[in-house]
Length: 257
Image (cartoon, rainbow, N blue to C red; front, side, top):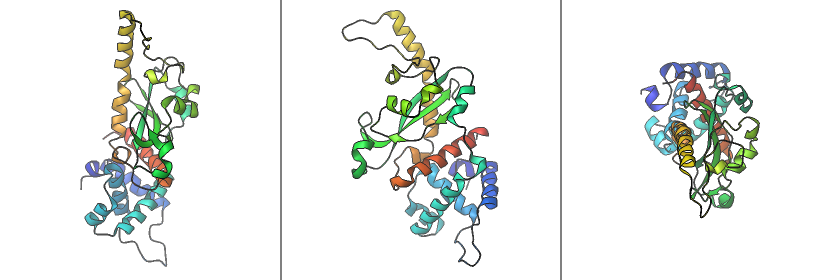
């Protein structure tokens, strides 16, 4: 298998993670029955799952294992990846040191409809359940941060305030109309019954053209399909899965494919 097509990593990046895992994880414990896969195969299984969000049953069929074995492998490798220093991501505080204007926007990571959590996870805007994340990038599309999740029923203003992003983003930060009133550079809303001046319309167009870069950045984030095509696993592991993927995105961005 070609690593970059199946795992989202180059061969060099895959080798780096494999080496790091070998140093930090005892895959086959002494005195216990050895795993049915090598650590390298286990990492590949986990990355394929995160990159393509295919079912554990399908992965089991591809690798000749049981679904239960695939589930145990993914859970263990995800937990180990969280601890690797090679996958550290910058803190929000680092946004203060980024020169130039930034762009912020929210995105919904969809999940299956969990009836017990439906009211707080259902996004009226997107008409489905999920988690809201704030994505921040530069004007040239360099991803800087993805915030931790808040329930999908919460709008972008709530998420912005919850994460106290006002400490790092100011009037030079571009955003859409959903962020009006937060001290950011947003398009002007037309007042009901009033005509918008040509100068204001042109200014809105300029802001929207510049801030479109964040939409492309979000699309790149969601090439990790577990964050795009619907999260199927228990809600209790969502934060771990998201955290692993965010670290992998930043890791690959340091040495792009």
